[in-house]
Image (cartoon, rainbow, N blue to C red; front, side, top):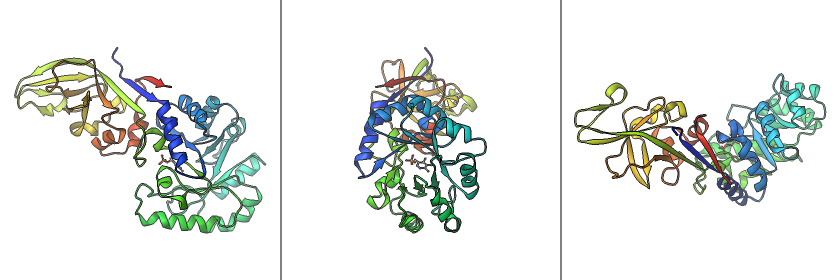
Length: 344
Ligand SMILES: *Cc1c(COP(=O)(O)O)cnc(C)c1O
């Protein structure tokens, strides 16, 4: 078999959710947009529901529809992009709760689906989604008369605890929502770690559930084992791979493993990356190809069937570091060719 094995530990995801839940006195939702950060919403959703999550967030109504199919009736499914043109049928059929982002969205929503639950997203400085303070003060009384179920905003710099932006957004969120008897939510994974002031009534962790930073205490979730297709000995002066990017200085044993940038192992990770075997680090050499990567295995005597890229010895953030990116991008890029195995 040539396909790499991506093992996804659902018990670790559940344990990470419970650990993040224990860090606050308030309700903890679960963000499972982008197919549960690439790990499979049909498996991850029910696992989180079994762990105790009653509220889920996705990016778009289409994602909400898939999640509802996996969860069945009961849990709330909130949609960050709000109520977009053409969404009304999906919102009604899958019983989704759009997070309304603008006056236009509010008008659409109350016209198309009067009485259907919604929340409101406020912009406290990130300038990405939500109503700005001036817009909100003009609309506030009208909006509140429609009984929103949640007021939420999002932090731009929560992974940097000392960043002044955190306090500024917190103050702005308090200013915009003070005195209203409506549940509030500001914190994602990073915000949970900033402390009680940021927790309000509901937190919205995503990356921490999947074993990523800034939740340093997360249990690893993903293991990626890649089959070795072939090995060869390369003599000094010989080159390996496209562009002759690697030239051997001494005798080098090279393993060609069966995954590449078409599987989300982005080309940019090239020269800095390592695979591991039983904890021993093995440098990637040459360029990452579409379906293959070449690895220097001179330091191991017997060739194993697989080399490991992610798992116990290298976290998703370690691998992200190879490519100068973040764990979020590595997870959501994980390819469709992997043989996905779920541990329950
Ligand atoms: C993605 C997202 C989250 C989850 O963020 P993490 O950093 O993955 O915990 C929460 N809220 C909003 C609005 C988001 O877009």
